[in-house]
Image (cartoon, rainbow, N blue to C red; front, side, top):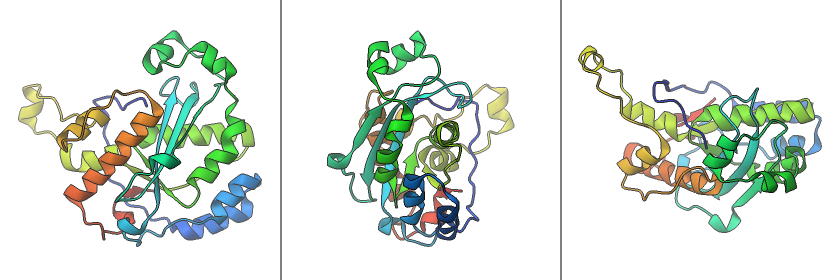
Length: 245
């Protein structure tokens, strides 16, 4: 995945949306059959204990940071719970973006022009993707990539968007390690603590994984969430304490 610039802020948000009710409403208005089925599968309420909620660790590799100018080239999804990550059920797709794949993107992600040329359009993997994430809460590291890019891809191809809550491990990390800098820190040029995926994992003594592979990054994100909950929350905390609207 691509990462938030070091100087960007992440602030805790409290969800005021009744997501089970919202999904019921969206199921009635969704036009695309697989999207309607996704909403009909329902979603956990904000009061559900974290330990009871099925989740899915997700990572997108993209050609850039702007969903209006760049496209998705790889998607990985790994079903998980607070106790276990189900790698045997993991899925990954390479897709052909409708926007130019640059040499810089190839260098970062290692996905070649030839692999992209053979890949399907995103529209061809919408159904299996929705089936893989139905009924589960998304877990990502930096909400500014996965949800906006997915919504953009849906609007471009289906002429309708998709809506769902998400757990952002970067936002959780920011709560505990990105307190407002003091004037002295600013004057002395002291850098803020990094909340990039690899640096965040290091704080919990999790192993280093090479970045920029969707499957590896999704796994890294899922493991990070498990560590964050173990250190900062209780398994019985409501899921609404950690998800974003």
